[in-house]
Image (cartoon, rainbow, N blue to C red; front, side, top):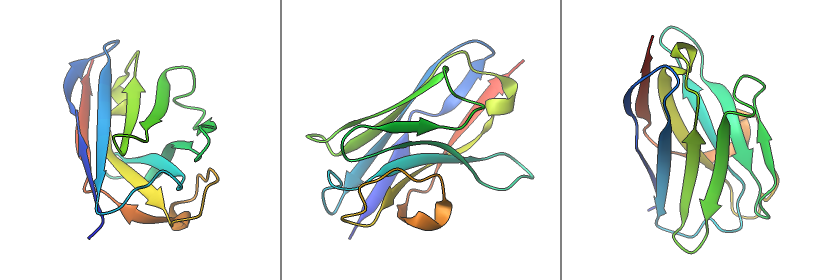
Length: 125
């Protein structure tokens, strides 16, 4: 059974950093594009960042130059390094993987087949 498990969330102050991890099990995701999404309280889930099978990345404009998505194929793990955090970054962060063979980036939630349960990130002002 495919499973994505996020970790690394927590409570930080404005300007601090956090690193989220997403451990995949059940199968390898080395040939899938993967991504991070987030849902703030009272808002719809939105795109944050995506990485292709070859390492190409795309970011939402709100996080570009502050967040970095990366992956370790040997560990079957996805990461999101978040720097210079702001209160508006407060949300539940979700890891997602596209279907096997879907190797290209996508910022569309409908393109992702597998989802984690999320990890809470809270940034205090």
